[in-house]
Image 1 (cartoon, helix red, strand yellow):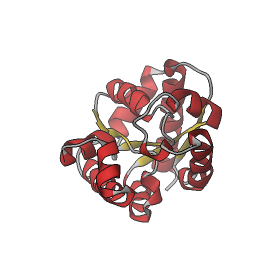
Image 2 (cartoon, rainbow, N blue to C red; image 1 turned 30 degrees about the vertical axis):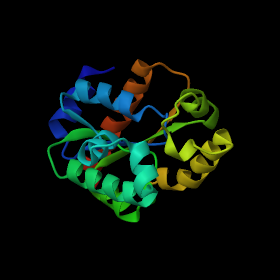
Image 3 (cartoon, rainbow, N blue to C red; image 1 turned 45 degrees about the vertical axis):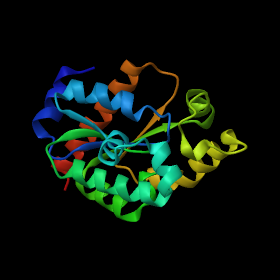
Amino acid sequence: MSEAEEAFIRSTLDRPIVLVGMMGSGKSFLGQLLAKKLACEFIDTDAVVESDAGMSITDIFELYGEERFRQAEKNAVAKALSGEVCVVATGGGALGIPETLALLKEKSWMIWLDVDSQTLWNRVRKNRSRPLLKTENPREQLKTLLEKRRPLYAQAHIHIQIEKEGPDTCLEGIINLLSKTIKTAKFCP
């Protein structure tokens, strides 16, 4: 990983970096690593929603429904984008709210962490706290959600396919693509 690229990003970054993708794509894990590399704050919108509500996402879904959660998520995203430059991990369905998608496209460097459905399933299948997977066939539900959300994720400024690489390789790929994207935007308006 090029220290020069990291320094370039730190010196020119003028808006938050937002990681989007499906549950299990590594947004929170890679987001924390990226924030550390770039010496900026990391914000997980799911954690913000839980903190603001004083309850888990599962409880919000059960008591108030997905629509209420998405509204709280939209507010958490807007709040994160209104502050200092940072790295933000969104919930997997955040882009389903048109206002959230528009805000992310305008006020962030949005990066789609694209992971195949089998890898996603391997990562989330034992996690019982995923409200949208509490169905008779959670694996099929995951595939359906991925296909439905794919066109939304495809609107991100940067698309990185996450294969079987380790976190260091993924992080290097994110930094390389982010550096190239910022340079292109900066010098080719």
